[in-house]
Amino acid sequence: GDSVTQMEGPVTLSEEAFLTINCTYTATGYPSLFWYVQYPGEGLQLLLKATKADDKGSNKGFEATYRKETTSFHLEKGSVQVSDSAVYFCALSFNKLIFGAGTRLAVHP
Amino acid sequence: EAGVVQSPRYKIIEKKQPVAFWCNPISGHNTLYWYRQNLGQGPELLIRYENEEAVDDSQLPKDRFSAERLKGVDSTLKIQPAELGDSAVYLCASSRSPGSSLYEQYFGPGTRLTVT
Image 1 (tube, rainbow over the protein chains, first blue to last red):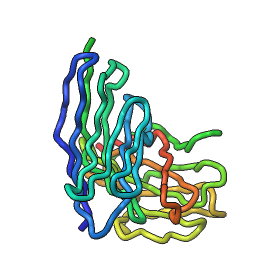
Image 2: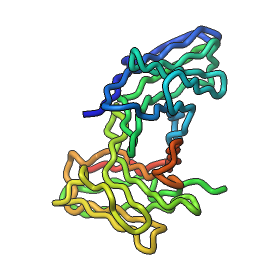
Image 3: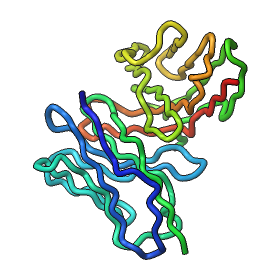
Image 4: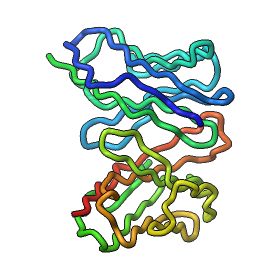
């Protein structure tokens, strides 16, 4: 069945470091792809999305490109801040969202 | 615009007791979802409603779980009787239309259930 695999956390970085969180998917067809973020004590929020191959989603300095050939949707940010500390979920969707297990990011000053 | 509202935020019950969770979606959102999120995992869909109709309940444990969405707005998810393995965060989400290619869902803060 359809599934999403994310790199395991926690990922610990210093402020202003470069971030990559890997995400690959398995699906029959071409789903829409999403990154959601869950800040401490808050609900899931949509961070960015891409609906077709080679689309690049971006928001708040985060980017991810829909790579059909590698079935990937890696999340990147050039310079992380302490406020980016959260759990990040990669997800795919045809008619329902299927999430990965989440990757916890901790950014230290 | 108000977000998805859920209550209660936290619930502690003993096993074999019943429990209910309530969700009020964003106004105008016809599609409502209930998810369960176990510790250290991503959310998993339990049930999806289109207006009043449950269109995907394949992952709902129907022997103990039930849900309703009367009048196509608010929804209630019930567990009776609760088991230790039901401890999790129960998330409600809503969206305008599943037919949209964007398919953006908005999530509530969740209800954290602890079964002792």
